[in-house]
Length: 89
Image 1 (tube, rainbow, N blue to C red):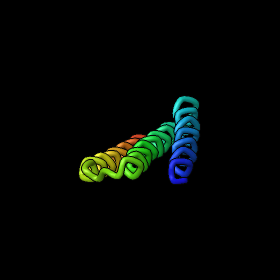
Image 2 (tube, rainbow, N blue to C red):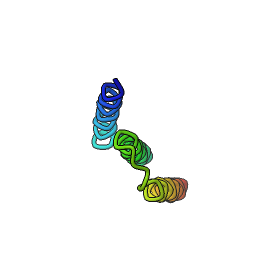
Image 3 (cartoon, rainbow, N blue to C red):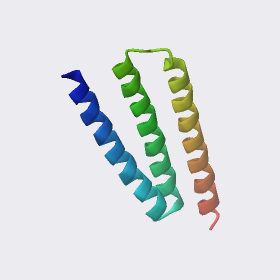
Image 4 (tube, one colour):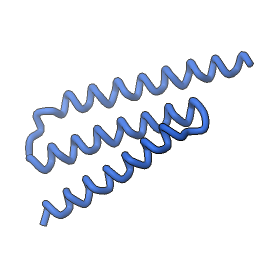
């Protein structure tokens, strides 16, 4: 039964990732693309966590947490740079 739950979860995460990639490629502005990339990275982290739950292996928790933190810091930094750049116009 849990295999079905994991399969549905992976399917929904893949669908969300596909929609996020479409938004990334067809995004309106720079900030839209930054947010789409942040969402995509968050979905990768979520899929990794679901995979760890499926395999009942928590050995990669520190790696996932570090990756999520780096993605967050990168997105915030990029958004601040874009905001400063666009405020000079």
